[in-house]
Image (cartoon, rainbow, N blue to C red):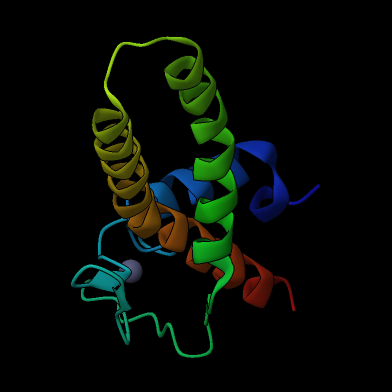
Length: 121
Ligand SMILES: [Zn+2]
């Protein structure tokens, strides 16, 4: 097992992705703006060309938020805590909030994984 494929290296790589840091130098940012991938690292110059996450992060977040939504829907369905319009507002805020919060770190993780796979070639 090489250093670059050790579990600690991979966990470090995923944490860099989670915090939107460059997978190579751990300093620069992989995104400029909310979801736009940077062309290269601002610190070390590592190119992110070809590291296209496409719709992967969006699909992953949709599935994950959907799983999180099930207990919320069940709880709102069996309790009369809110009126119907309150349930709609609560579900909308929950779903939108989690989706918007999870998209950038998920994209950072996808880019880190793609960068790692490119290094293995
Ligand atoms: Zn860098």
